[in-house]
Image (cartoon, rainbow, N blue to C red; front, side):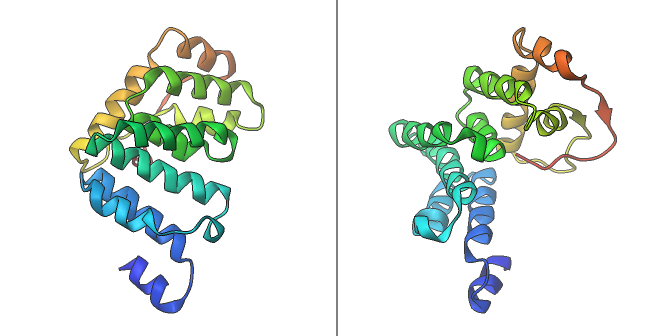
Length: 171
């Protein structure tokens, strides 16, 4: 509905479609996700938006088994990692690429400009009230990655992991 209102009003037609595409991937509806972001032109979105579009594609292609397309979108995202860490991390969760996700988290922790967000992102939050199987799988990959022997020292070098009594933004 938000997408339809934005389109009808001629406002922000891109982010609403990206968000809807991301929701479709969380609901295991990859073809609808690809359709939603498929005809957004590059000049309609800033770099963050373009990387968010690629992130939706990564998640959708992971579900459809189109690994070549998934890797191509992921490679593009990795070339622009600093512009869009959040969509990149979600895409890596969808691709179940714990090795690259660990590298991205560590790189983000090492960079003073992105460290605060990285530390916020590694905290333990209340579980979602309702999660889809896709979201549960993404969270399992995230937890596995955060527990790695290379990630833990990087986190502890700059902060700590605590439990926060709030809900996170879903992946």
